[in-house]
Length: 414
Image 1 (tube, rainbow, N blue to C red):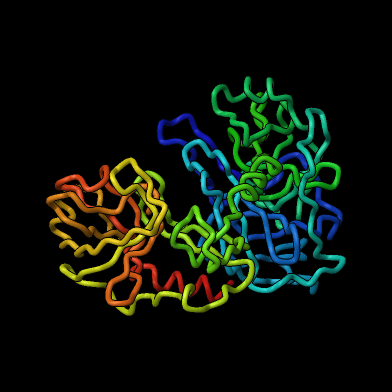
Image 2: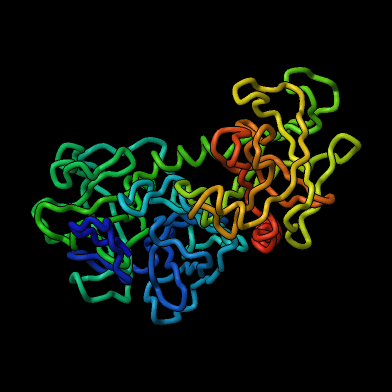
């Protein structure tokens, strides 16, 4: 469904169901990439881009989604449908729910879709489409700004120039957005279409995102620019993982360098509060386990205050000087009360403090993401703090025991 934007300081509001205004019923199964996202009811659209992945809008996010493919009449079983649950839902890491910037989401299917005449992927764009290009938007959103459509609706719309788009929504259009539709109004995508496809010359150029009302004069639909967004996913989803290292600037013969095949941030990570600061990286091939490369155990329970732990990394050794050789430090877990006193109102259930309140010893920049190991178990991930080794401000760590179920489930499904 597409979001409705109201001129309130509260930002954007999203209606619970959406559709095409001024369009027509699609020829049945003419849009085999179109999917319905369902959680007991149709709530958003999406686009199948290969047998395993669907692209939708980040504002449609739910942790569990049933993806329905091969649909035309969403309230009638016609025999061509495939219903597949999600195994992973990834919002764009820079999605902003207030500005609706970077409104793109990837959904991994729990099993591959069966491709046939009713279910087919749409091509991703090789370049951005230019103003004036005619495109097709589809969905089961409102057909008259309030009435839902049960049969898939289609509408041909032109891409609008950047200048006209900016004039329609002054100061609100980012590089990750474009406008399409008719400035005179009367035809538009609408709520319930959110996350659905805008296809231009056979390529998925847009994702239905937001706008003022539906089909209002002077306010065309706003769409997430797929080419721009997927370039970000591609750039930021590949990491080289280096194992068996000690001196990171010297090749010692024990190293293994393996690229990532999948990078998964915790779905509730908050870049402002740094809550849920955990990420999983899947290697493109298995590591070779030997005396230089071994896994650490995940925790069976949370460690208590006073437990001595070992933190390690190649971070700064004197608040500004990087260390080339792996550094280690033994630190105690600090009580929840002392942790809250050190950072009033900033510590969540997914965090703990460790270190020395008198300062002088701490993890530091460059250690981020590294391990805090207590009694042979990974209890913490280096996360944040004020400065490095400052008195009264111990290091703050992501509490791995809190994430154990998410880690287990995510690894099992991938």
